[in-house]
Amino acid sequence: DAGVTQSPTHLIKTRGQQVTLRCSPKSGHDTVSWYQQALGQGPQFIFQYYEEEERQRGNFPDRFSGHQFPNYSSELNVNALLLGDSALYLCASSFRAELSYEQYFGPGTRLTVT
Amino acid sequence: GNSVTQMEGPVTLSEEAFLTINCTYTATGYPSLFWYVQYPGEGLQLLLKATKADDKGSNKGFEATYRKETTSFHLEKGSVQVSDSAVYFCALSDKYSSASKIIFGSGTRLSIRP
Figure 1 (cartoon, chains in turn red, cyan):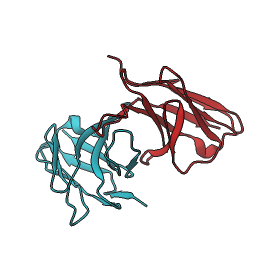
Figure 2 (tube, each protein chain N blue to C red):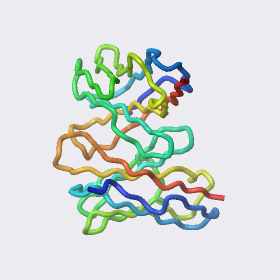
Figure 3 (spheres, rainbow over the protein chains, first blue to last red):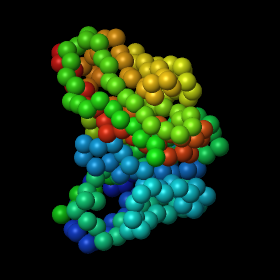
Figure 4 (cartoon, rainbow over the protein chains, first blue to last red):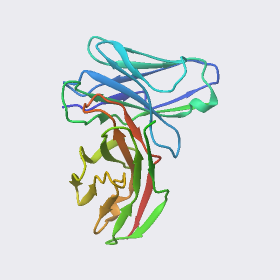
């Protein structure tokens, strides 16, 4: 049973460019959450997708957007990249109806903006 | 808003030493509390959890007790091993659901000397 997978592993972009990160949830999961982890910090919640709609959003600008597909996989898009967007981006999946509290995290995508 | 404050690192101990990593939280209502661990090059893993006051979460020799009166959830282990070297995150979730966003502390890096 594959866990949460993310691609790519690493990415280098230039300021002002756009980037798309991808996430496949753990088998059986229907909810995907995205987090940003800056170096030396804890992860910060970006947003969450369920039934192909954004259900919760953290304190991130509209440059950060996402999408969820019918197969529950998800994309995170960041437009007009800033140097401060350099971070590890983590995807977490869960099964919404399950009252287990556990979200399963992927290994992350390391984004470097130069 | 809800927040988590944890002991700053890095923490360096010798093998078989006793470990305590302090964590306090601020939340309205009755949050669920977690400790996550991040090993080098890997994603976040749930280490243990507690969902109500006086609950004790435990896993792999680690323990933490949900103390509502002191709003704390300190992580302890009686005898650490080199393999415990990692970054530890205290976290909370404010709803009884696996789909709720998680709020993380800033992390504590633990290094164990042989």
